[in-house]
Length: 324
Image (cartoon, rainbow, N blue to C red):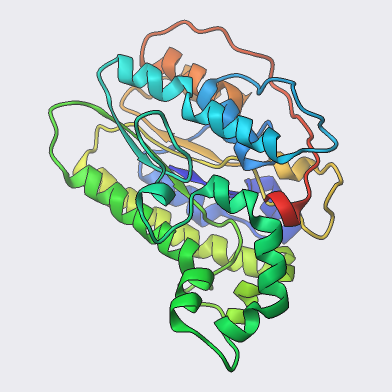
């Protein structure tokens, strides 16, 4: 289960003055172990390409000026990713509950007509955001409010997250004779920040206005809401299949929209918890980055001997208003 933009402990402590101890303690009580990791990229398409291919993305782009074709290349790499292919070769059924296509398994955005394909969403984002900034308020919250547009524009990501949660639990509850590899990608606590810590919806202006993406108090409240979602999932997954390997990780940490274009090590501070039947010490004593995570998992849980690549961070500059 991938939780997009979930910040690591140090980032929350230093930048938000928040100790996430109770959440960490809950996971440890549920037999999860913390695996010290850090992200290699602070931009989701790059991060997920490297995670799912167990290697850095090809250096065929300008780090200081990303283009839409660069992003589309990452989508192609994810579509043909090695990790799902390896699991499939071992007889696993692939369940894709994510924003990305995987070969033979379309993205949830694509398979549900309520949600736009993520690639198209990125491609059209400049025009879309300008249009909504200039006139969208009137049709979403203003005097000419259209309920269908309000539901579509304001709450589509929230609906997506609830659908992913539902699908994960449905997969766990469905009997099968074959093992399954389930990739669930939650846009949590990634902005927009739909809900407060109790789960109540935030006012529309805090969802529609992109300036609130930099609001740390909204992010922190959304993270606390995310913690409750994770707790509910963990309890139910443990009930359904106590022997399953369950992974809770993030692609990168909080992205500070108040300081775009600046290298920030906190952007790479993420989380990674694993619950596995084979809880050997070697599994959790290693310090590594996301690019090596599945190499490490295959070595320690599936008896492989894959070499590791060098752990490092890669700084790429993108225009948040266009690409994120």
